[in-house]
Image (cartoon, rainbow, N blue to C red; front, top):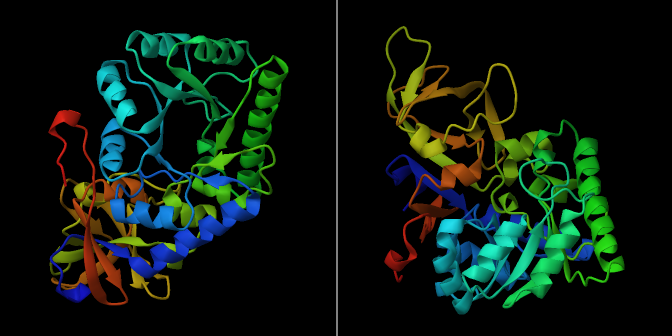
Length: 371
């Protein structure tokens, strides 16, 4: 099948661009002397994760217990759940930890106590806030040592180390600012590791990273592993940050013009918020809900056309195209776009070469499909 024959809206995954992205980050991690534990929340796809593992990934990172269960059933037994432990999911967590080596994340004493009460056996990472101000303990306070000691002293728990996420790199305005965020994270984490070790704690792991920080960080001395995820696909936000070019974006949405009225200054496509999400992307005026390729192979965007508004199933383009025109859209945020679809149409050049399942879900793990 050719791309032009697909029903729309369709989520396209360029196999050749994907491979190039995976290889580049594997080399980057090797050069920086750290293990690569990719975050699979971006792709939620067994085939992509298998390729990451083939070229050297040291386990995976997940964001939900559903992802953890799916990947464990497909023989990914070394995982980190990089999300604060959810109190209402402790029984499911305990069962998963008996199935795979699933590292869990805490940033409070009550979270540690809840793991003990639920009889969970698992490696435990201490989440540290390095400036993002989302979750994690203050590295300068007394809490990190107290929580680490509580983990070490708890039955069934193993102190895996300290973990952070440089999400504030997404707010940077230049490569220099991204490098500064990455260095702040590295310095904060390695300083805390030294403080804990001087207090008598062993700190096996120092886990950091994001895709933009990995694109610019100068060195990672003292860090043991990185957990970028978006690098597999990239997107418009990453391109705006300088982490990639438009030619490096592996995921696009193919859409059709469904309405183009005489005398109008816009047209309507069949890709709305339930295909592209409502992530507004880079801060700009006027805002764009998605760019449109002029030539995908060359990584060239249309300078005169973009998506300016999304409703549930409608997308509004700020110029007219004839009804039936196919448009290839670069999403603002590939992770959220992927989560809107059930499968990828895997492509190479103009051909569709495969179809891969996207494992997105949140239901009770007892109802998880077996294949």
